[in-house]
Length: 193
Image (cartoon, one colour):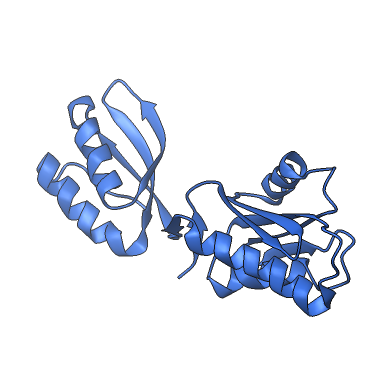
């Protein structure tokens, strides 16, 4: 099951006088990933190496380090821990001691691994779009039931008769919600795919 991060996380370490800061964050698009990289990269650092994964899309960059020693190990760390919708940036300040290609791969991949291991994660759930209508007095309870089942209220439209809701809910939770809404409204509230 894929996971994403709940927010920004950071890991710092020093390896043979080189300083490494690893930053990771959740993303919703390739533009989010690039914006994060642009915002957090340190132009005074020796290297700003990164990788991101978003469903089937992924990118990585070695930023001047020998090919395959930074971006790929970072991406491998993301995939090894079953993360998706995540960007990881590792900033390095060179300390004067060469690490070699194996040492660089271990430093970049290890920093990304440690950062992601210590981060708060949340399971990614694929949700099905649904709609329903309820009265004004039932709205708070409907929203509560949807939230309890890990669903989202995507849109609310207020009408003269009540509220029309666009929902997103995990496929396995639909029957449970339908039963709860029927109990709540004496069978009036129906879910539509």
